[in-house]
Length: 182
Image 1 (tube, rainbow, N blue to C red):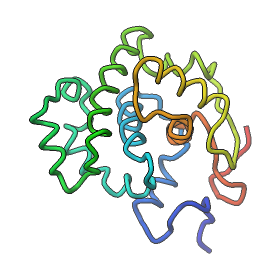
Image 2 (image 1 turned 90 degrees about the vertical axis):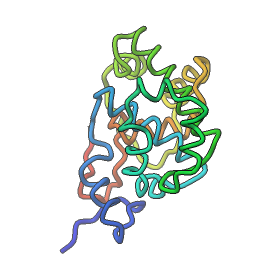
Image 3 (image 1 turned 45 degrees about the horizontal axis):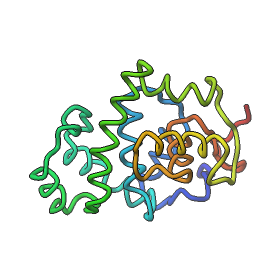
Image 4 (image 1 turned 30 degrees about the vertical axis):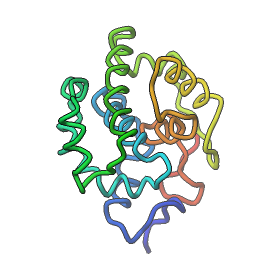
């Protein structure tokens, strides 16, 4: 018998199943991963995560394997290069936001020692177990602070999805084989 997974997981997409089973909701607080996921989640705005996930490898290539120092120094020439890259989502506002957000991410790392230490000021190192939400008080607070710092495409829904992806919010459906309570 096949494993039961969360309702949102497209079982016909092997990449999506692998992401669901091996990555989504599993705590990963490495700053390089946190940065990559923040950039990808911003590109998801108005689209499906599956669309972004299907382009993840192209994003890695186009965005220099999410090297934050390189992204911080992207210029108009690089932006134009990204805008013609058919492998990624070619949205000028989101591309410019990713550069802007990279600079702010670095500022947060300098201020707190790491981006994860920054997130911990909101989470107190606790994993939140909840299902069926798209925003929360936690995502509202982090979103508001990131926006105050100047980040773009970091609304509460995007941040909630981000927190689920990195394992701060654990949201596997009760029927899913990955489900567990705190």
